[in-house]
Length: 209
Image (cartoon, rainbow, N blue to C red; front, side, top):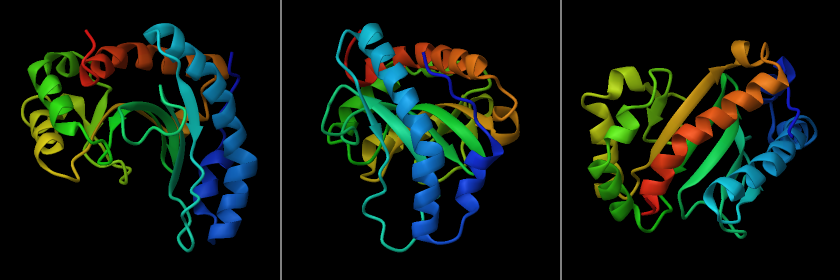
């Protein structure tokens, strides 16, 4: 079981100036927590789905100038990567923790995924009001589901289908000031609950009932 407490130090990493300096802090402060979460939730998803899942901790290896503004651990049933298929993530921006299921622009079968999601859009609409959706994993902002159910939700899924750069993310955001107050046990419980509620969406994305 993962024992991960978030601290102000974690979120302050994203205020550090300079690529090397921020990467050093990411490596020493945040990455060990992602590895621990990776062990816990790769096992969790393997049990829940019947497929072997692997954890992928962000390396930010291609960066040469700009320091990363966020970081994460992703979970997918593919050992060599995750960006081309639907995947789950736990990650940090300087402002919040995110717990999401995502399809990003690298996925080659986005059209089919989006169509399946449009046909089963009620499973997204039925999530509780504290969920958020996004059409861009590169931006920290997201739209509260309570505001998006009527029209924006469908528009984002249609964009996923029709636009090469279209993406779809849904999950929970926990503000930094709330995350640092949570016990490790409470965070783990919330993450498990969120993933349990997102699994039906993941199953539709991959064409599994």
